[in-house]
Image (cartoon, rainbow over all chains, first blue to last red; front, side, top):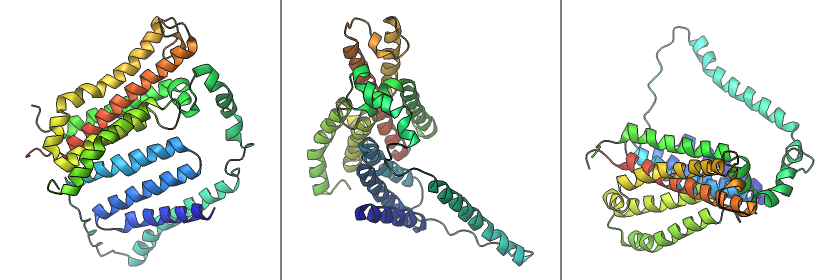
Length: 184
Length: 141
């Protein structure tokens, strides 16, 4: 139990550090560590398929792709331009606080929303009563596949997965159109 | 980075095993965690690692632009073609139990799922390779 809190704390620290660092190279490295910590957390929650994806995509390929993108730009973040002298300094300082208020309000509403949520892994939670029992009982006899995450993704939600593969393919085509220099 | 002997030696030893593991993840998605997407990402990452260590040019010699451009749509094509085969067998689109020429419905379903996982893996691997090379390759080198 204590390890969950330690992991969550490290995730928050990594998230804050990634935002606060001015050097983007550091931020990318910290995001990789963040993804690896998230992968460990997913494993703790018994969702190994998600953990696998997080470790391969989040910690692995995304870090490299961000580094490759960084090779086309500058490593250091630029200082924001100095704000102009406001006509009414009081109003300007108040308007600068508005975003903080919006963020705090949204956060408070989200925390309020979690109060009604069922406990983690509660078998009587609505999410576990709707289609989950059907998949757990029927996916193996119906599809012949033991891992029912694969059964749902490939068989019951086959259209969605086809769409996802098409999305990935389209993303690759867009990158080729935008970035390919020499059409040799 | 190309002069670092430890990185070169270790990655030369590791890359075949990473690729073998990627194929295992694609093929083993039925039985354990993983599947086409994760395996494809690992397969693509092995080529990216090769290019990072031995240079973009050496990487493009291993997996040329033509190869990655060919395999990117090939996976989607395999996926969609399996769906059409199910139509030929008298079922609905992507209804794997109706794959033609296979009597047992469960075997047909398993084969169909294997097939689309392989398709997903091919496209994802090729697209990951494409994304990396197109971003990292500069017009001047």
